[in-house]
Length: 176
Image (cartoon, rainbow, N blue to C red; front, side):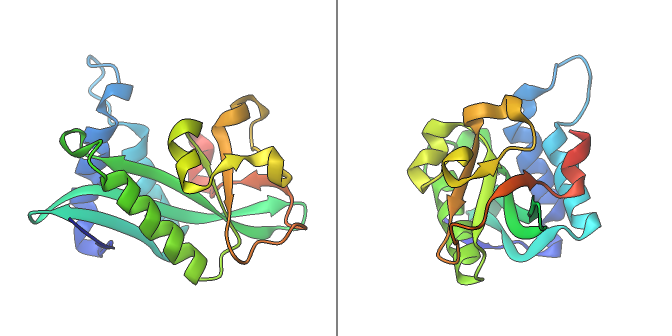
């Protein structure tokens, strides 16, 4: 497996990854795409994707996984932070280390870029192994209080304890 930066030529493959990875979230009779597919398109189109923080995993020439970080912020003050997601892996490659490799790549790159914090909505048991913890432990409130334990943050090297407030994702997330 090779984890590399996403290129413009990967767009169709990335759409296919998220369509396959999240297919079970869409009722069979609707013919609709999973929201993650259009979310990635909207993040790109709006310029919210942070340069250097979109990666693909490639196995035997096939893109099998994708992760992206977009620009978010904390209020009050508009302090910059990152929103991670979506992270998708083709079903036939899940539970084989692809998601972990993508997470390590994007977190390492975000840290190297001097980003202070990464936030996400996801399963605590999965993301906890990458250093994510309940957001309120770090003084960060979720955009929606109902998200509870599923809204998590990962402080990076540039994080300081005064970085607190309510997290807001890029505008593309607003319609979800």
